[in-house]
Length: 403
Ligand SMILES: Nc1ncnc2c1ncn2[C@@H]1O[C@H](COP(=O)(O)OP(=O)(O)O)[C@@H](O)[C@H]1O
Ligand SMILES: [Mg+2]
Image 1: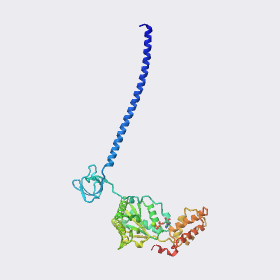
Image 2: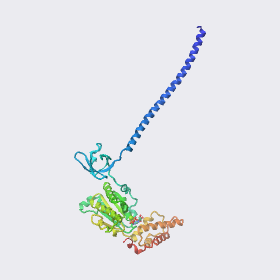
Image 3: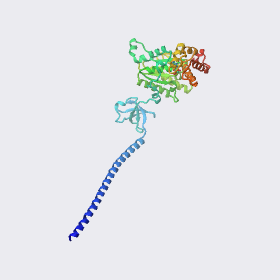
Image 4: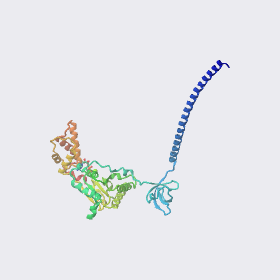
């Protein structure tokens, strides 16, 4: 080989080396990319496997046989329990090991396996959503300042309800038993509900408000169960005040002839009586009832130890009517010529609710005439309108209204 040939050869070789190097670089890059993809796919696979496991578990969970709800009747010495399920007879069964022995108590609500009826879990006690949905804790807006002319009734109600709850020692020292239940009695619209709400607003106790008609249920035994759960809730949340508005819807006199619907109402009433008898007057639960039909209430409700304090809410007198006018006109823009005393004099026999309506009407008159102040004439027309609308409402019909 001469020199010429050698040079040529080495040139060719170096060219070839550089193309190979290029190729090598490209291949390395591809290798890196594929490596990255592989890692990604691997993590994706792990993720999907997890997802599969989760879905399988979910499927198992959904396919798991239903559990039966039962109650524990008794605990045997060997650790087995006697349960009663809704299916009828009592059974002796085993309880799952993971259930703490302390939770297995007589009366507890438990979940049972469908086939073996073994106790699979202990459930929290049930309270009807209607009961838990009752107006609890949420404090009403009404305050004592919103009530006109019922000072004595207000004081009496607080003495009867709040003091025994918050200062039971005082009663123990003096040695008397406070009333268990207080009944507010008076014509419709005189402020019974308002009064109870104001007490609720001020008290430190839990306030549970229920309307009597809500306790009247469609199915046999439901009403009584509601009453039971209502008082159970009251005891759990003690100190508490249970307010049953429109008590007459459950507490009407028991009659000889009755339809099955009446009998259901009576069962509810009996449960209410039993609950009233069951708690201690110095205990942590007080009950307030309100009705505008005391004449149809069952005497059993009014017996000592039940609703043994009756507070009469009278029709407002001249002075009270003036105050009620002031209260409802507080937020209104009233002309200086308005004299509430004169207005009160013109509406003998009006209830607080009527006066509220009159104030609203007076405001409506002003708005209709595009004024931003309510004048005496507006009020006078409103008084006439509210009285005029109801032909039953004459000054001397007041007492007959609710008798
Ligand atoms: N003494 C009163 N003072 C102020 N407002 C009253 C009074 N009595 C009734 N009212 C008005 O009438 C409305 C209805 O009163 P309410 O307490 O529901 O009557 P009831 O005695 O029928 O339960 C109240 O919301 C309030 O506006
Ligand atoms: Mg009411």
